Length: 177
Image 1 (spheres, rainbow, N blue to C red):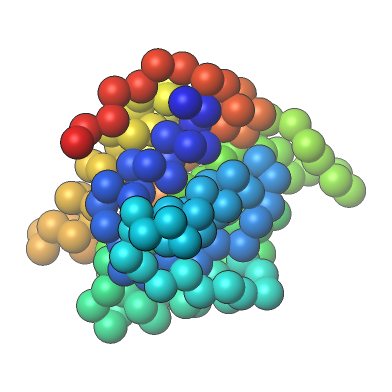
Image 2: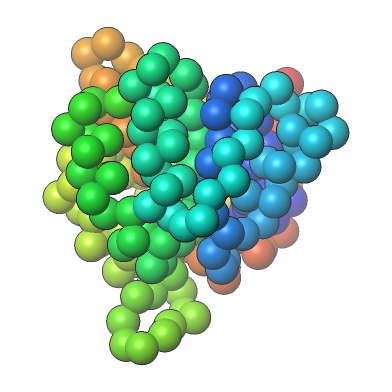
């Protein structure tokens, strides 16, 4: 499975009730796969289509504050664009789980792998997990829900993995049943 398909499958196993993602390369496959799960009946969730990443984060922030289990995913400038809502999510201590498929943000336009997008949000109050392979993507997304929803933690969590490497790399992965 590619890293993006692993991320979507791991999120599906955690049964989010509200999913809102805006497609941005190299994360787009995660959003597409989550929509396909709902369309095929493999996931009972509301997919909220939005006009941008900031709206996607505001949707999951509000749904989480109302008590729903939520999921979103982004990359690069999408993460930067949702910065104000990211700060609100940590301030409200809502258990949002988000995948960030790392991509550089320098210059006019970048389509290279890197972690600058994640580093730009380092001090935003989110717990951040960085994975090294596709198996860790699955394991850490599942763990992220457990941590985010723990009464003693109650913080949003960002699971980060390399765009253009892990996002598109096919590896053998054990998905729990």
